[in-house]
Image 1 (cartoon, rainbow, N blue to C red):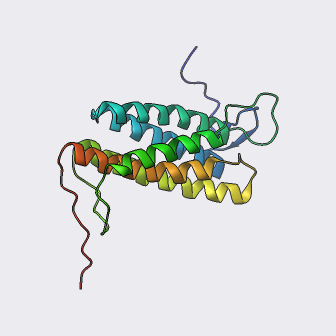
Image 2: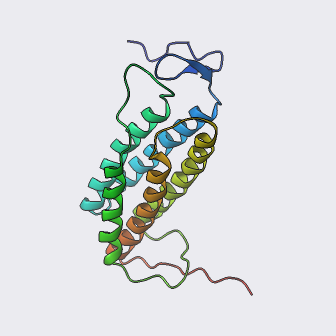
Length: 181
């Protein structure tokens, strides 16, 4: 099987089920940004965070493949991809609570940064927020699954907590944001 198909040379691509759409359609932009987030999470994993965080990030990557397939499957098709479920969101919430319980409470906003792994997790969080904004727009215009927006919202919270946890593990200082006067 060849990697190139030439079917996208006119600026269109296929959704699951075969319907052709422009490559800049909001549905494709949403799925593409979820794919970008998945790649950013891969970079996070390559920076060798704590083993437990690495395993969570791997599970997130699996979730994001399912989410991308979900977004690329409009309307009714004969086969439905695995969809993000309430249980996936509950898992993220448990992980947020677990990691947050071991952190000092925040009294200020902090600047994204710290160790290389934590900094990249913060970056992935910003890509997640962009994906969330696109999926919110998509949900206004088209029918999508019940949980993608909620999942992305919780995921950005989890990524924030994981970045802080990784900084705590490496004893990397968190820089407080001090507003200019």
